[in-house]
Every structure is written in C-alpha cells, then in structure tokens.
Image (cartoon, rainbow, N blue to C red; front, side):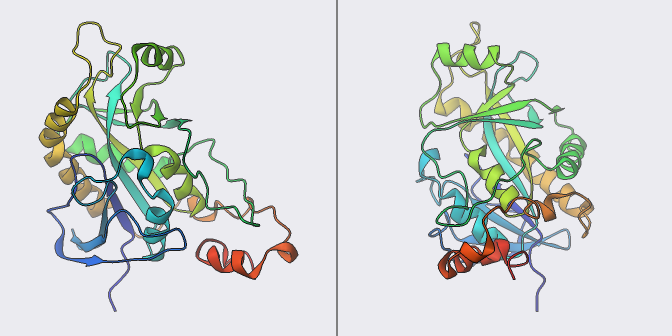
Length: 288
C-alpha cells in the first residue's frame, strides 16, 4: 500500500499543475462540504508522495468567492496530508516588496465578507487559536527553499485577504497600507484557518505580481500583469517545492497537530450523531 501524501500544494492563479510530479494520478473526492475545486493530483517528488490541488478549478473557473475552501481542506485531510503550502498571487503594499519577488508572510488579516470561515457549525463548536496563523516551522523551511532557488525572497509581513474578485480602490489600498499590511490577496482566508482547524501545517508562498493601485509611479494592477509575473515565476515555485519536499522530514515538531485539543467547547453529551459523523475526520480522536 502506498504511503499517503504528507505534503500538499494548493496552486493559485497561473499555477494549475505541478509538472515535476512523477506518475501522478487524479483522485476524485466527495466531502461533507461538497466537492473540492478539482480532482487532487497525487504523485512522487523527491521520493515523497505529494498532492496538488488547483484552487480555482481546471481552467480557472472559480472566482475567489466561489472556491470551496472547506471541501478543499477536508479532501486533503482525508488523503492523509499533514502540511499544506499555498502558492498565491499577491499585490505589494510596500515599496521594498517588488513585483517578481516572493514573500512568505507571518501574519494574516481577514477582510473577506461572504465565506464560510469554519468547519464547526450545526451543533459542534470550536474556538481555534490562530494568533500565529501560519505554521512557524513550515514557513521557515519554505522560506529557505525559496531562497535556495536564487529568487529574491522576504520573510514576514501581514497578508490581508479581500473578498474579490475585483481589485482594490485606491482608498482601500491606501487604508490597508495605513493599517500596516504588507501584501494583499484574495484566497488565504479562510484557507489558513480551516487548515488549523484540521490540525494541518500551513504556509504561503506569495508571488508579488504588482503594487496594487496605491503606487503613483506604477500602472494599476491588471490580469495581464498578474499572469505575466506568475508565468515567469512558475519555475521558482516548482523548484522551491522540490527542495522543500526533499528536506521536509517525516515528523512534525510544531503544535499544529494538536490544535483542536483545547478548542472544542460543546458538551459531548449534546453533540448529535450527525455532527459527530460529519466532523469525525477532524474530531474523532477527541470525541470517543
């Protein structure tokens, strides 16, 4: 029996396949939260089993607001994935994070409006701790892997997630800058929070494609601008993932694997059989 993929890559705009995966097979999954964005590709990379999921679907048919985030994370959990690297396009909100460069952020601000932010509803409540929303250990390893490609990389900064699919107004962009945000994107929330609820490590490889709309000496962001940078950076992303997979190791030393241990608040005697079954993959080890 083949080992489950311990690492998953969620590809964003411009990265819809991982060409480095060997002997890849497509796996169709159903979850209590619907179907994931696309079939999950599972193959071999540097002797490791790695999964790949196209966040926006095959052919980029899903807007940020339409991405089935809960189904995506649940499906990867069901496959045995323990670590997730999100590859995302982002706009820069500071001069020193330039287009073409890569950022591994260490903080997250959720400015979305219409998304289901949690697995826990319908009679089972959990209050997960996300003071540090990304896995410190995985983020550090990811940053080292990006640096090893020779790309200009930055560690740290707050990523603000907006609802999209439209880009920001200048008033919004300047407000986000005044709040101390470093980069801006459309998909990291609630993905990071759901990964924490599922006790999975999560880190972001954010590719800076533009200066949003605040930079007076640069053109406002366009789709063409985003795709041009992403196509240029595809090799960086894939090479960084290859290096990460090679040096990741089997054991996790972080606290992500036990994130739910102190988060469940509902009296077990009041949890319905339906709720227990729906979330058994996440809570089974705590609700005997």
